[in-house]
Amino acid sequence: MTAIAHPGRTPRTGLAGTGELARLAFRRDRVALPAAVYVIAVLVAGTAETLKKLYPTAASRVALAATGGGNPALRFLYSRMYGTSLGSITAWRYGVWAGIFAALMTIFVVIRHTRTDEEAGRQELVGSAAVGRQAALAAALAAAAAASVAVTVLLCVLLPFTRLPAAGSALLALAIGCCALAFAGIAAVAAQLASSARTARGIALGALGVAFVLRGVGDAAGPGGPTWLSWASPLGWIQFTQPFAARDWWVLCLPLAVAAAGTGLAFALAARRDLGAGLLPDRPGRATASVFLAGPSGLAWRLQRGALLGWATGYALTFAACGAAAKGIGQLLGTSTALEHEFARLGGLGAQAAITDAYLAALMLLAGLVAAGFAISAVLRLRTEETGDTAEPVLATATGRVRWALSHIGVAVAGAALLLAVAGVATGLGYGLRAGSAGTEVARMTGAAMAQLLPALVLAAVAAALFGLAPRACVAGAWSALGLVVLISLFGQALQVSGWVLDISPFTHAPKLPGGTVSAAPLLWLGLAAVALTAAGLAGLRRRDIG
Image 1 (spheres, helix red, strand yellow):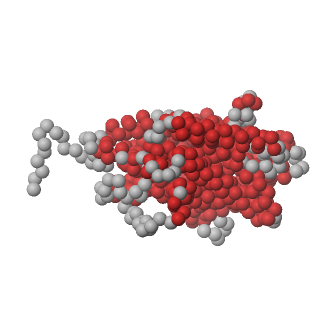
Image 2: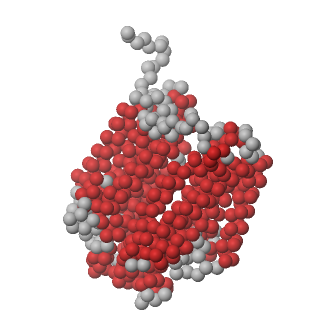
Image 3: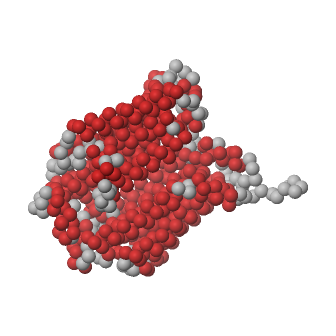
């Protein structure tokens, strides 16, 4: 039968309206996307500038290559080192991690503008207009590709200013950008497979985690080990370009091929599924709910347990590797005069334990900051439930607003504590097994990790206060607060900001363990601040309208 076009109406194609949706995506991400691009590029360039000051001579860089490049734990964390130039150690120190951050950026962009919009019903609303079925996917991939190109271009501009060769800088930038494109394709496929944004993100982030482990195991393997595993990882391809050594440009074809294959597969899958459904079958639930789901606390745990499990797995792998790397941190002292001067303030050059403790304390600070991120996301699930109209059925029962809110806040508190405990145990095992004192180090590092719990809960309490008092601004406000705290905690002292600025971060007032001293007064004030902010949020929630 021949199709008859409606008079005066242009036949709609699958990609119709892609340009309009792409402009909408850029408008919605006009703050977050440029910020992510800027942070990634500046961190790489800043790393190059810092390494140039720490290792100004060829002899110091050769010593670093012999020490850091010969440490299996450091190779697992960073990568193999090709060459001893400033560019080579910059690519070794931050190339893989820049690829991880760029991949995270594209994963969240693609999932946000495909599966998240579809799950929220926005995709169906937009699709009722003159918009093609695959336009949203094309627009999301266009936004991710534009962000990847922006990172590449900005790195090509910034890295030569740090006295790195232009050709090597361009190759490193392209390797990072192409890695981001590869994971954009993977995220596009995940968005077609899963029926929820949370599951789609889990699939894509799981693929990123597998890529990191494959690359880490392959790089850490000695002669005769499975070094070929690095070639199975898109993150490993960044180092195999050898941007400041052999400059193997052909390796860029590998991530581009993955990006093209993922994009093509995603479009093919999108054409074969129903709107709102995923290709992976949904697991049918039990005929009757368990007793554990009789109250809001059990429901909150059921909704967030998958995410917590993913976070805990990532914590265990990352901090075990970081703890194992601590055994060789003290050896890096002799490779840089600048490092010797810096660590001289930690207790003297004769005590390498001070250097190791400083490194471990920095790891625990990082664990606390990331745990705060989980706690904030757990609290903000309240806002997701409210705007998604799933809070009303719960509140229509005998469950009150405060009890409902406390159920998710309880998951945030317990989840943050669990993550920090995992970080402490994993770090203690990683370091203790190499140092020959696993039992002692596990206990010591678990205590150091738990010292970061109260600062993390203060940030979760900020999210709870905003949810109750200013619900429309709670998401942006809570994540902005975390971003400010991260900047102050990680870069405040290096930038020599005023003391009152440093005091804004609750992590400034936590004990710097191991190696520091513990004072009860700051911990008491942090606990009181968390309780007061949470109470203010709950009081606001009782008075305002839901939805």
